[in-house]
Image (tube, rainbow, N blue to C red):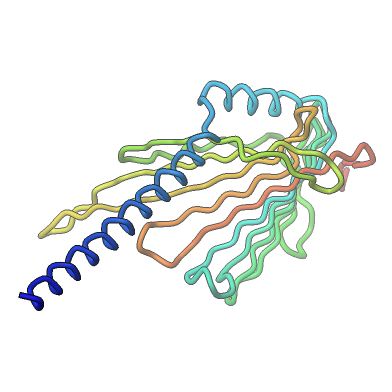
Length: 235
């Protein structure tokens, strides 16, 4: 009888501990979820902020440095790096330098548009002149896409006060093989640092596939510099 009571009491005690831990974990998850949800903003609000920042670029002389890195293993060094430097002088002058570096490849391409003609130089070659611009391309993605918009808070970036926003996009796609179908989840998180007067300062975009250790990272840094000069390199 005493042994039965002992086992019964121990069972109740164990059940109580498990219940307490489950309740605690559940409360913690709800607390984290609630905290995360508190930062969520409406899509329309975010798009209005982004639209104003884009509009503010139109009359600005600036330099945009974009760095793209590809990691087969996000905990190791990148396999390739592409750096794109874009300089803009309103209303119609622009300079672009693109450098690609990997273990097997190193290229450099520079283009200048002086408002009338396009000039191009590859690697250490000579400048060439073209009477025309370039075209635009579109990319198409498939699958179900959901996006969440958040206001992260305020930070200081290069001695400027910035509002920080984040978008998280999840895309669920189904891939087909000859014998089966499998589900793939793509996640892209992008952070935006926008100054208090509505100008882009920096963006950081990271893309991954759930279950994979690979990662793609894109960083954009904006510099507003009235001293940028863009001139035709040849006549």
